[in-house]
Image 1: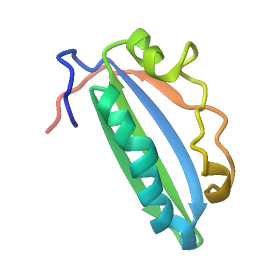
Image 2: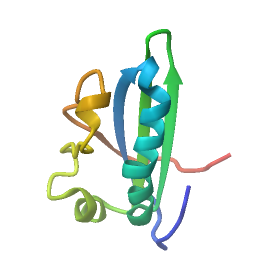
Image 3: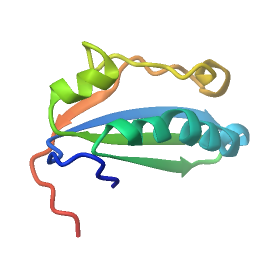
Image 4: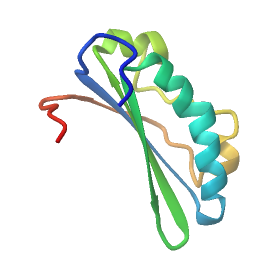
Length: 110
């Protein structure tokens, strides 16, 4: 996790999206460049995960925030609202309609 801010992560914002397996490598590069890298500049940290299956790949991004207010400064007044990247409709099997926002209860990386 990057730590450009001094706050402690108390909130995790989780986004999931699926793409055709044949587009997964291209989408991974796009998501990293257009979605995750800008997120890393604002959040306490960010992670990107990928699971390849037979016909599709699932991507998960998790960003970490000190508060819902801090997350709202990046994501807008409703941090659960999706902000699709310009080419998501081209890549994704379906456009997600929400993100998950969770309170971090334990944060002790191993």
